[in-house]
Image (tube, rainbow, N blue to C red; front, side, top):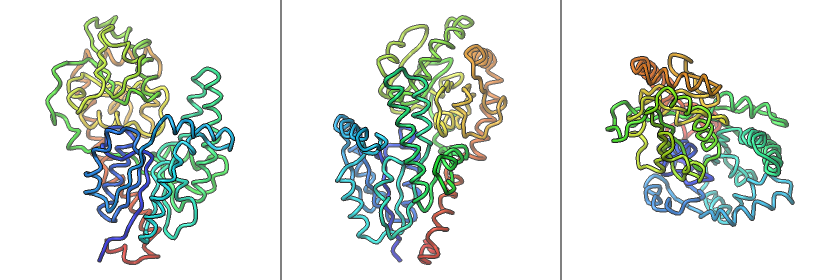
Length: 407
């Protein structure tokens, strides 16, 4: 019997899984492709990613990749000021994506799946198949937080986006046959949004605990006291590193003048690049594999002041048996025992003290790292998390199509 067919929409090509949202979209797509013939339609905002089209075709029934010109999309986005929409919606509006959805629907789909609110409108209209939307994070809350940290006029633009996107998220929750978030906290936040009338389910991100394991790779030649890993053109990461470098790291260096801090991640902004070479900070930029850098560090820091959902960087570091020192925002959505499986510190002085303590006490750092990996092995592997999605699919589809029980 031929497997049923599924449409998978994504605002960003889900391969390679080299940043937070792409890790989640790829693992979800890969999982669904074991059960369905998947028709993938996704935007591509980095032309280098087109080289992965053949790999995606080896997994999917069909693949439609739509290039996203950021300059044109930004101009298109401005129309939202006239229409009253969240600016995100026209940013991702494209006739080629609409055509891809229409073509896929001609195949008689069993499921329509939209990854993120940015592309959910493509399946908002009449459909013959159940519609699932993975909202991931409450993006509206992220924009509201940005507004509180930015000066006018951007604060006003971000505040408006937060309000309009909150309205969009509630509308999606109400029309989708199932809506998901990345954590129980995000699900509750979305479900309690103004106008939301239905529940939001959740499944957390997982970790490949074989790939991210202690000793899975040799450490880098450069040894670090601490590292931060993340895309360095993402504002929340930039804010975290700048805050750490300016408010926390000088206190660490006062105790440990030779300590080094590695910033690992693609596309560092000018402000991040300016840190390179100052007070033991090394900005490595994009690397082929983050694991050697994590392996070489005494500990991993996640000084997030703006954090939505779940930080993959924290899960991966924990899986590699590293002690993580983080703000409470960086540990949101992760069910870890504070003090024994991860260290939380909100204020610069306390954060610096914890970093110094663990660098000077490698045995204590090792004990915390081992407990952290045990937590990941117990609760944060992908199959266990994706079982929540499978249960929702079964609930939606089996009664309508008994053949799904056999696949």
